[in-house]
Amino acid sequence: MEVMVIGTGADALRLGLKGRLDAAGAEAVEAAFTAQVAGAPGDVLVDIAGVPFAGSLGIRMLISAGRVATRRGRRMILVAPQPPVAEVFSVVALDDLIPVVADEAAALALLAA
Image (tube, rainbow, N blue to C red; front, side, top):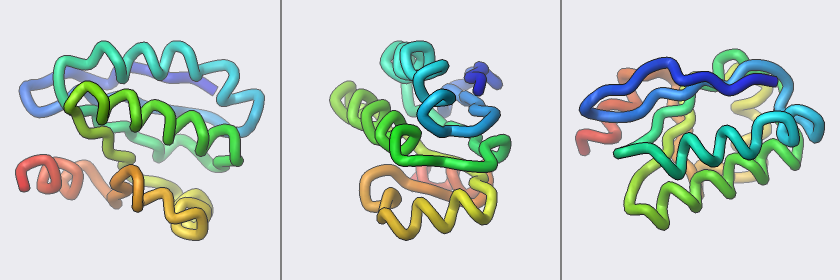
C-alpha cells in the first residue's frame, strides 16, 4: 500500500492511494495519509482507483482522516473507486460520512457547489 501526492492546486490537494486497503495496508500508510490530510491547505481529493480492496481497518482509516479534514474546516472526497470497493462503501454507507464520486470532474463539481 502506498500514498502519494498527485498534485496541489488552488482547488484541492490531490492524493492517491494504491494497493490493498486491508489491515496491513492501512497500517503501512495511515500515519503518512493522515498527516497529508491534516496538513492540506484546503480540501482533499483522494484518488482510490488503484485500490482493489478495502477492509474494515482501511475504512476506519478513511473515516478518521475525513474527520481530521472536517475538524480543520475542509472536505475530503474519495474519487474513482473500483466497482468492488464502491460496493463495499455503499453497503457500509461510507458516503454518508465522506463523499464518494466516480471521477475528478464530479469531485470538482462537488467542491464548487
